Length: 47
Image (tube, rainbow, N blue to C red; front, top):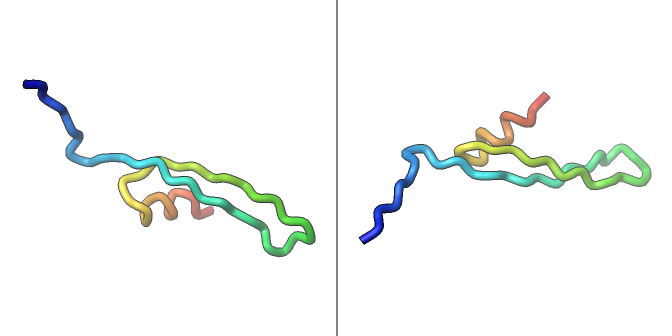
């Protein structure tokens, strides 16, 4: 029987699509971050 090791705090890759709404021709900017949950991922992208 095989043993699978799982981390106690899993990390996920979150991908967000960002658009500057003030531009006339906005371009999509894909932002990626690694975090334990969505809230932490969004906080890591705040300037």
